[in-house]
Length: 315
Image (cartoon, rainbow, N blue to C red):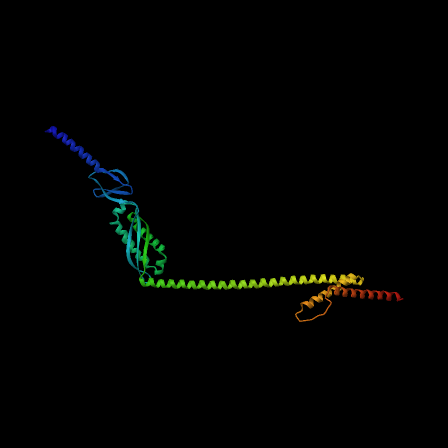
C-alpha cells in the first residue's frame, strides 16, 4: 500500500508544480500593460512580453490598453453668450500613459473623461457668440484640449485631440442666416456688376480719347505732308519759272514755246474741269495749237529785232 502511495504522491506533486508554474507565467500582448497586486496592493506594472509572478500571492489587477482610444461626445444643448440655443457634439482621442494611475486614480476612466469634456464644452461654447461658434471652431477645439488635458494628467492619460463635429443652430436662425447670406451675395453681385460697367465706360472713354488723339495726330501729319508737298511743288515751279524767265531773257525760242504751251494747256484743263455749262470755240486741233504757238514765237522774234534796230540807231 505504501509502495502504491509514493508514486501517486509524486505524480500529484509534479502536477501541482506544473500548475503553479503555469499559474505564475503571464504573457502581456503588445499595446497592453498589466498591473500586479499582492494581497490587494499594487506592486508593479508588467510591460508587453513574458513574465513570472508568485502564484497565490500575486495576481493581475487590471489589463490596461495603452493604444490611442476614441469615443464620441453625445449631442447636448448649449446656450451661447448671445442667448442662442445650439446643439453640439464631438469626439475625444486619448491615450493611457501610466497604467497604474489610470487604474487606481479614477474609477471608470472613460466615463470620467466624457463627463469632464461635456462640462467644459458647455463652458467654452457658452462664453462665445453664435457667429464665433460657427467661424472659430479651431479655437474651440484648442481651448477644450488645453482644459481637459490639464485636468486629466493626474489620471495618467494624455488627451491628444478633441474635435467638435456638428454645431446645429435653431431652424429660425438657420433661415435668417440663409437670407442674410443671400442678401450679401446679391449685394456683392450688384457691386461687381456696377464695377464692371464703370470699368467698361472708363475703357470706352479711354478708347475714344485715344482714337481722337490718333486722328488728330493723323491730320497733323497729313497737313504737314501736304504743306511739305506744296512747298516742294512751289519751289519746283519757281525754279522752272526762273529757268524759263532766264531763257526768255536770253531770247531762246524753245523756252518761250515751252512757257506759252504750258500756260495754254493749263487753261484748257481748267475749262474742261469746270462744272458750268459752256460752249467754247478754240483751235483745239494740234495743228491749231502749234500754229498759235508759232505765231506768238514770230511775234516775239519781231519784237526782239525791233529792239536791236532801235539800240543800233541810238547814239
